[in-house]
Length: 139
Image 1 (tube, one colour):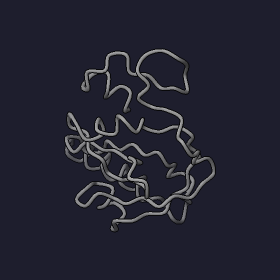
Image 2 (cartoon, rainbow, N blue to C red; image 1 turned 180 degrees about the vertical axis):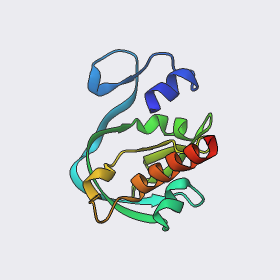
Image 3 (cartoon, rainbow, N blue to C red; image 1 turned 90 degrees about the vertical axis):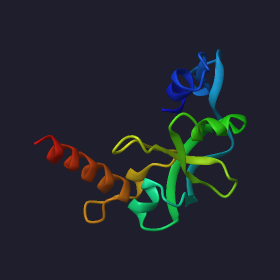
Image 4 (cartoon, rainbow, N blue to C red; image 1 turned 30 degrees about the vertical axis):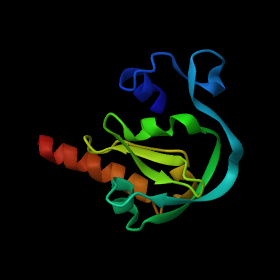
């Protein structure tokens, strides 16, 4: 999401993901401290879709990530229609969203790791609610 956002709206034509090889401007880079198999606390942005879905401004999530938005490019997560929806204790971006779309959310953490049939993750409920609302509106 962020690589394409940087390419098409952020003016970084050669935006790249460091995990997929050298070349271009690495927008997504190896984290200074891997979040592989970690539990992180994220602060949700007041007024964000994620804050509404969680019904809270703090969430504890599981992650298996080793890559994230390059620290020097954190600003692209709040430009050109994108907004920061969550940050971690270091202040780095951990979730983004667009408010010009019914459900455009990206997270560094993996909601599926905390979801279960009897307790679905708020992100999944939000996705289903948005899909249902779109279907009803189109009927």
